[in-house]
Image 1 (cartoon, one colour):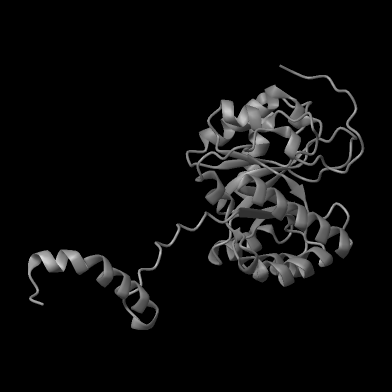
Image 2 (cartoon, rainbow, N blue to C red):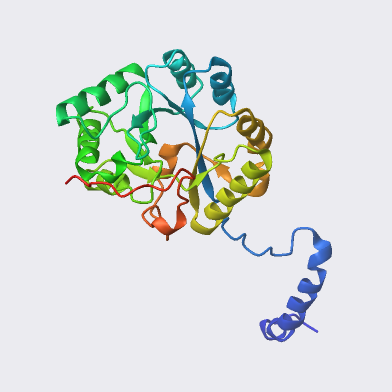
Amino acid sequence: MPWSPLNIRRWRPWLCLLLIGLAPWSGGWALEPAAMPAADPPLIAIIIDDVGDNLHNGLRVIDLPGPVAAAFLPHTRYARRLARLAHRRDKEVMLYLPMEAADGAATGPGSVTLAMTEQEFINIVEADLADIPHVTGINNHMGSLLTQQPGPMRWLMQAINRRGQLLFFVDSRTTAATVAQKVAAENGVPNLRRDVFLDNDPAPEAIAVQFKRLLGIARRRGSAVAIGHPHGTTLNFLEQHLPQLAGLGIRLVAVRTLLQQPARPGGYVHASTAEPASTAATPKTRILP
């Protein structure tokens, strides 16, 4: 039968079926479905507080795998040395700013208090920042009293803005009544808040529970922030488990990376997802305007 255009049209459906049937054996004929774009992995950032007064534990913090941030207590013996090393290792350096607590607990040198005038407050903050080289952000040490006060928190955010470089602020949330993050946002300071304390209970099994909680929040919301301390049990746990995050589909990032992410549903302004510190209940205090 001659292969006229009419005959080709008549046999075309059968030829197509034949080619489809041969596709599994043809190597290159089968059309693979287009790959679906991978979803963005959940992100976590981890800050280790209380760095500066113990050289051995400070070195272990800096040696943790991945971009774990180190928050340094000002005017401590090893803070400057460790901060320089952390910067050379591409770790974020933060000022762990001591603030007055509601229970009157000692906060250490470089603390800001409710009794200070605005100028006294600012002078202390500037001295603390000058003591720690390469600072990129601040979070509060204690502060269950002071972070409730809009006035001192405004002074802090204005001091951050006057520094002339873009520092961020992370509210450690040592009280559910904190206004620190709200005031940071009102003053244009890039800000986040702590979602989980890893080691209020430093027992290994308790840390494991909190770490699992951190990953759960990140999976639900897209990102989460944890704060821990340079306890031996915390460092042991992180040394073991941080290298496993990629296999769990979780990405560990710098704190500033979270600030660069687009707003996510249920973001950092909803107090219901943040866990209050396991300190004594905060008494009612006088709130200054």
